[in-house]
Length: 132
Image 1 (cartoon, rainbow, N blue to C red):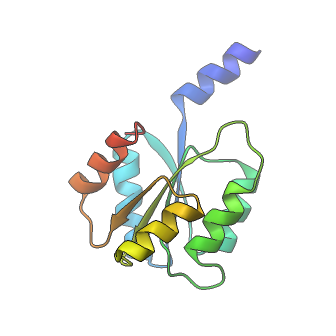
Image 2 (cartoon, one colour; image 1 turned 90 degrees about the vertical axis):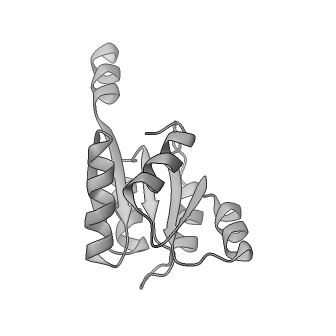
Image 3 (cartoon, rainbow, N blue to C red; image 1 turned 30 degrees about the vertical axis):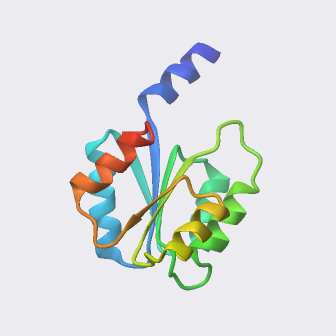
């Protein structure tokens, strides 16, 4: 039975796209789907955290500035959830000062992409992280 579950996991990578902008969610989702991910979306950190508690994704692309729970609070809470395999987390945000980037990485993000980004830029970043 374990082999079947491992095989199923290997075939189905999950990406959670978190952004309060429907347009950005759609763009990011399209890119993740082109890389073979099954994509789920959330419009803020609270919804995203609930989705992660249901089923932990392999990759999380999250905005920083969102209502309800911002990206920093979401990433901090997500990293506090015990899980056998932690997801790769990438901030996709317009907050691009060096201080912001350091704060995002310190909260638990693996990397950072500054908006506006295009498909090539995000794919390159994900390839560098080994998740493309």
